[in-house]
Amino acid sequence: MKLLHIDSSILGDHSASRALTAKVVDALKAATPGLEVIYHDLAHDALGHFSGASLAAGATPAEQRSAEQRDEAERNARALQEFLAADVLVLGAPMYNFTIPTQLKAWIDRITVAGTTFRYSEAGPEGLCGDKKAIIVATAGGIHAGKPTGIAHEDYLQLLLGFLGITDIQIVRAEGLAYGDEAKNAALASAERQIADQYA
Image: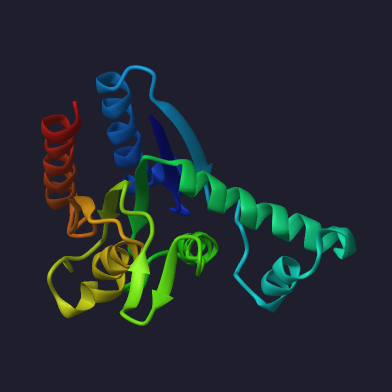
């Protein structure tokens, strides 16, 4: 079994989402002998925004690509193939200004590929990745789940993953992290209990 572990927080060792994704992965590794883990820190090794150059690189025959186009095409292909190969996704998704980090969006833009991870038909869109499980580790300074302010955060990620056919989606949530030490510690403790109960 293969697990793809994605972190996107810009806060390094001070990140709550990073600490929680690590706990999820550690629990899954302990419970799943032989689990293969691929890890990417999108803040440290950013993919860059999806752009016209990204599309041009993919549309250019391999033998005609410039060095920059080869690098871009290789990054895109690697992100897509790692996603396709994964049985389980663990996505660190802190909230920045009511949405996900742009680093995570850049990764999403590279794994949402018509004809590969979804397709359109006369009946409408069809996701092609229904064999995967996704665990979203959602963190926020405020309280947003189930509210309009959370639509571009957790709701967006669930919509996007569902569009790709992934229906087994679980959320580990820690909110109110900016509401003082007591609220922060309580939110993190609750998330850690959930991880221990569900994944250990």
